[in-house]
Length: 380
Image (cartoon, rainbow, N blue to C red; front, side, top):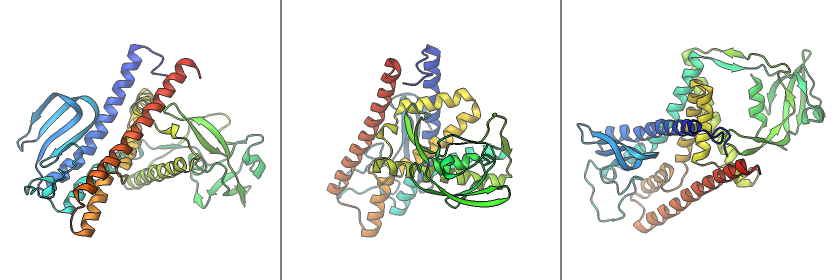
């Protein structure tokens, strides 16, 4: 499945496993801490803060009665508020129940919504903080958006792009680096794009339809990508580096987070439309592959991987699916509009549908991970 995992020394397997556990634990802690801190601000009693599930390995109880614990299976975590029926904050579906003022479900709907929203928001804040640190203290490597070579028979050659051209805009978006060009093209295979160039001081506009190629992703699968067939550096060299002031780095970090969110939505849309395969969905093995590869590349690469993963987990949790934070927010929006919660039957069916959806995604991810594992061993 995954090259480094299958190189297969006990050390390599342990390294990838530990990288996965560390990455997931940090992101889960930040996500749950978002729920926790806003819950405390709203006056909700927190009974437990857990990293992992199953048997408690060790923990302690703080002065406010919250049990902080690390559990056996580090594949997630939860905050349990007073009045929670379970770790998903699903209420006990009893319309006659009266909750105490310090319970989660005894709070006003806007307070419950704020507590739920705080988890994904904490993930986005973590990502922005990681990107900010990178841009502010290390800088951003880049190559100029200049064409050094054009592949024979490529979409770029057919459109008339030549070596020495500087790509100024793609579909109206300004290109400041060669990476910007890749980002503007890779999700538009087979779609006509408008490109603005500068050639010998003259402005040139043309239309290009990117070719479609399949390339391996960082999780062991393959993606259909759009490519122009242009090369930036014929003889690879050191990239340039942009440095940012703290304020500019914050703006760039927010922009980077927005880019990940928008690209994720576009990619999911292409999966729904059949332009991308469900095989791109990964499970724990895919995350372990990405975490281990990033950790092998150094602390900075691992931190940036954490940022990307944190955005993804925050975004997934906002999907309007019961069992996820986004599903809770949908219920609260309906409650605010109606002036009362949905009835027990409607909520129960919502949670059943949500559980089925989440289970299906997990099974697809595990199936894809297993397929990559088998393909690696048997060379298929």
